[in-house]
Length: 453
Image 1 (cartoon, rainbow, N blue to C red):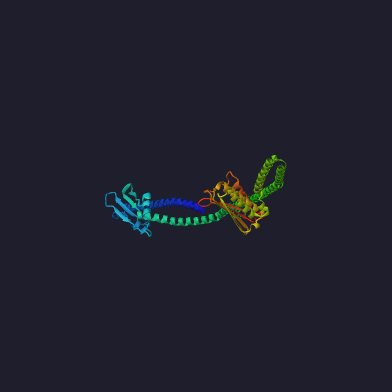
Image 2 (cartoon, helix red, strand yellow):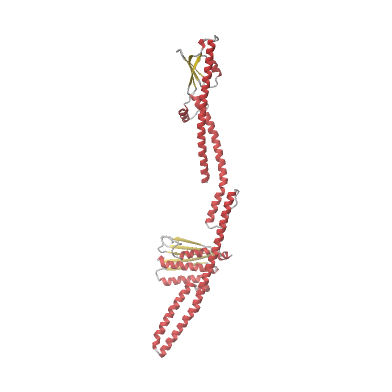
């Protein structure tokens, strides 16, 4: 629309410039024609007077009837012209005016002022009346200034009317032509905005003009390529997450099966040594107790590592139990500094494993960040499972008053975003007034099936 208005404004400016130049030329031609008519009238009337002198000199006329303007008055077609003859012998001058027709249309005062300053209407022309090298007097013809202005106004008014109709017709045709030619541009811009919002499945329609067809085809090819790359990236991200979880499961199993059994065996041996030492010698009791303490510390660390790698509740009891255990653990560790609450709406059993694990990891990461950085008194975890979609919200009343930088030096929020995007979900961060942070994650339940097809 702005381009159309810009082009139309330029056309109007060019048209007005041409109209101004044409108007100046028309006024110049009108003044020139007025001068030519006055000159022709002067020359014609002068020849009539000289012919009268020739008749008088030949004895066919009377000197007292000179000058006789009767013939000129009867035959003159130029209204509003005054003639004046001044005899050379000092006799009284003789004047005669041809009646002027009243103008049908009165011109504007500004036009009269401008025209009078530029062209001096009503300019008189004089010539001598002579015969046989004798000057009998001077003839002066004075056109009517009002008639000159009226004629110029009639000419310019006709031009202005025709020009106005022409400019309007040209503007209308240009507007329609431009609107039709640039209509695809608006469709392309709207399509690019749609694609920019993430709808890469949108395709531009075909257009009539070849240039727009080529542009739309190029954009559609680029969008299809981006869509394919995004789908491949999402599939790769899902595979990487699955591989990561498999590796975690494997490490957890190995730690449990190997280190756990070994540590249990060490604890049993230490207990046996302590029992034997009590019966046979007390010197080994202290060393056995030391072995037992070390093994207990190692067992505690292995249990914590197992919980971080792969919570047993995820595989055995599901997401709800894992979140309850997670929140209960943070309440235990934080003491009275931060109070954690969990609300679950819906059936978590309907969630596929990738979504369940992802939601648990996100909750785990967010609660860790709250404990380390938020200095919050309350933190709330809400999980809502609807038909086809699950929403996880973690909110605290901590010290945050500005959104964290996702691309910052840490990997927490960046890792969360990558996990969410891999499952075709959305991540939203917001500040809770007056302070605090709210993290919302939404995942489609069927995202895994979509990613693997």
